[in-house]
Image 1 (cartoon, rainbow, N blue to C red):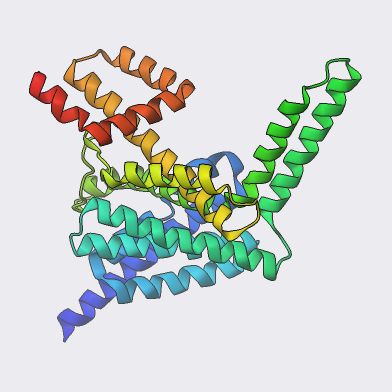
Image 2 (image 1 turned 90 degrees about the horizontal axis):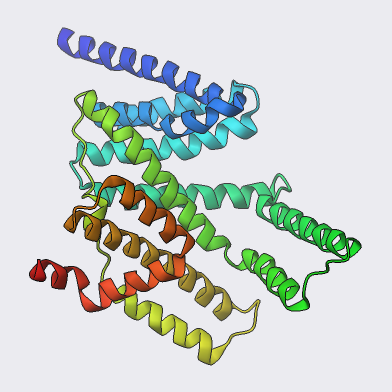
Amino acid sequence: MRGALVKNARILTEGALLLAIYTVLLLLTAYVPVISIMTTFFLVLPFIIYSEKHGLKPALTMFAAAVFISLIAGSFIITLPLTLSFGTVGIVIGVMLRKQRSKMSIYLISSFVFLISLVIQYVVSILFLNMNIIKDAVDQAKSVFNESIRMAESMGQPLPPERIDEIHKAVESFDVLIPSVFLISSLAVMLIIISVNFPLLRKMGIQSARFPAFRYWKLPQSIVWYYLITLILMITIRPEMGTYLHWALYNLFYVLQLLLVVQGFSFIYFFAHLKEWPRGLLVLATVFGILLIDFVRIIGIIDLGFDLRQRLQRKS
């Protein structure tokens, strides 16, 4: 009986300490703009530690306390969404670490949870706060673009009509790409969060899985076929803008393009390791790859479609 009381007291004390640390991180993120760039990615850490050590139920109690603090911490419009998003993700990661799941499964599931939280917050901001951040950003981009056209015309250097149409279409297409933007943002944020927090967890004695080196990343070969089928459908059907088919194909094509770019860079890093390139040359190749992104995507297609790595390894 006494042992159980001591154990419960220790769990509560540790929870209070981690909650205090989270509160400091939350306030820094909400009210100190420069520091918030760094502290945002560590908001999950107290929840990961607590849920990994003590399980789901104590972590939910800590989460409820964090939500209450967010409501009384001042501008709850900022602090509450941060707690709901990063607190939930932190608990999911901690519970999965406790169950010794692989790092890739942790990454994918936590990215999905973060994506759901982003979508919910976006919908709530539109329905209840009359705020549409993405629409405001698109309107601002249109305004800047129109002002640039007027300035160019006043200086006697008008833009060609074809160029103006291209930019107009690019700005208009952003509305269509909202799902892709949410998905890619979630994957990118979670990749950073896992990359910066897992080394800290290992130093604290919490076992956390490791990603394979980037040069060994390889997507399923079916990605190439999905990409080609989507490309053929976009060329042959040419769905009208605003239709569901256009929305679906456009987003799928955009995501598949990005995946093939990642595959292309992974192959470049694999090739650099195989040929023992110096680090400076690899950095230079990365910079040129960003500038020649279409070429990198083609490399990704060839790597997946023709199993280029296996061929190179056999030759070497």
